Length: 200
Image (tube, rainbow, N blue to C red):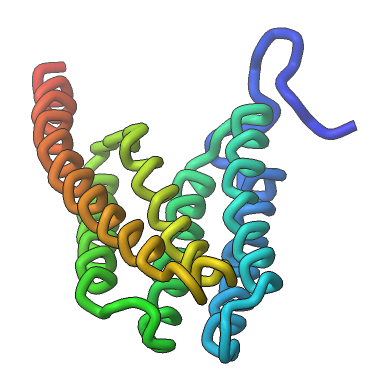
């Protein structure tokens, strides 16, 4: 039987664990993302196989989240999970720009926000400041993934590409809003956490 939380509710894996089921699923998602990206670049038209592979890769996010809650969250998972999302989202969108299915401007806006927030979060983490992700940020990633999904889904890609385009611009709006909200929240959290440290 796999390791799970014990009867006392203590997680099976501590925060410093590396080889956990959730982390292995996340690493597999990172490794599989280039396959999906390659399929987009190589395809001369939208195909159900490409959509199916992308959908399967994206759905592993829910699997590793469930495993993490069941077995215990880790610092490695907190780093790898958003990294996996960014590889899939930014790689998929870049491939669609390459194919001429997405305009470059909205993708550049999304990429700039993701890289900026990642750099800020990394710097804050080194200072001992942690700002948890919000539910809206998770919806942002969900919309980003469906913008890609709609662009590679044959019926919509061939007959109603505006659905993918509209979803992409919705993703841009959510990306910008959550980025601004994160920076605003981070300043408040930093003040509180650093204030507690200095007053202790």
